[in-house]
Image (cartoon, rainbow, N blue to C red):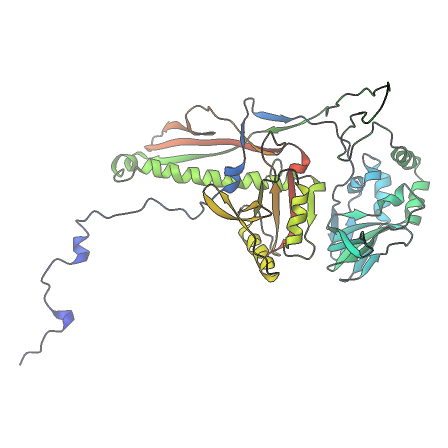
Amino acid sequence: MTEPLTSDEQPQLSLGTAAARNLATTTKSAPQMQEITSRHLLRILPWVQVIGGAYRVNRRLSYGVGDGRITFVSTGAEVRVIPAELCEIAALRRFDDTDVLSALARRFTQREYAPDEVIVSAGAPLDQVVLIAHGKVDKLGAGAYGHETTLEVLADGDHFGDQLLTDESQAWDFTVKAITPCTVLTLSREAFQDVAAQSPELRAHLADHRSGAGRAANAHGEAEIELAAGHVGEVTLPGTFVDYELSPREYELSVAQTVLRVHSRVADLYNEPMNQTEQQLRLTIEALRERQEHELVNNREFGLLHNADLGQRIHTRTGPPTPDDMDALLAKVWKEPGYILAHPKAIAAFARECNSRGLYPQSAELHGNRVPAWRGVPILPCNKIPVSEHGLSSIMAMRVGESEQGVIGLHRTGLPDEYQPGLSVRFMGINDKAIISYLVTTYYSAAVLVPDALGILESVEIG
């Protein structure tokens, strides 16, 4: 008696699907690319045509106010200030005697403070200059109704107490308390006076600084325009003129390029149903645009993170980005703020802080879509904003457009063999291996027309 055939052994009665696929036309997608993002920054920037390859930003004459960050070096746990960096202190701006600066740098003493420990107290004699090498501190003062309020948050590279260099009879009018473990360098009044006593050049420089020689400046450091208002009768009106910077900054267009190579056999034989050259070019351009946005954020010459004015940078109060921090950021660009850009993880951290407070931020419409917003300002994701290995990032707020004296993008259109505005694809020939080459090029940059067009919230914890 023969055994019945199992289901796996039944004879095949029709053509199988695996064989049938050899004769079928497969439905396929275009090549996909995970690197492609929304590239909101490239969309929101107003692009200005740059004919001569450079864009000059003319401004009113401004005087340096010495509000820069100070850089340190460390050997193990020992931290030292770089002597030349002391010129970032207002009273030492443009002082170039390296021997005196080195002598001052050697007199700084390193100190460590734990969280909630007081570094200086309001009302005590102002007897030291304090440089923050590492950590974050609260600058506290009396509020309008007598309660204590946070005036400012200071962090790595900031300093306070430099009035000691020019005024001998002051007291601290604020309290500074450590938020995190802090390393600071302090210069006592006695140590400073010892160095000044041996340097006539330093004494003369500080005397010039105290005298305030030079033309008056407004609250923004710009040369004052003399005006009269509210007068009665035949008074003599002040004469004035608007002074300009003698050496305005010029932004030269940067370039991103690559050579796309396609074998002629591929271009000839494998162009159905999709054109291989077009698909190769499409993905190459996508990668080039991603790199363009990365450079607009991170390039040290013109990138927005590096070109924000130091006075426009603030720190979070506690670490994560809170509603209070976002309000402080918008206050930096209060003249018609247009957009906020943050890493997606920073946006998620801000949402968690809102959730913990029972807040539900409104949304705004942008390009036909609803996006998160704060105080009506759209919050857009930008994965080009870096996140450090310690989980820290930054959030940018900006005003855009030439008419608004904001942030603008720079490019050049009308290029030979232009494929997209500001991007050209040039045929470079076919080599002896039958490989076709195309030169893909785009030119771009960005400019901040006035300092308060861009604000940065730094030290944003996203964990």
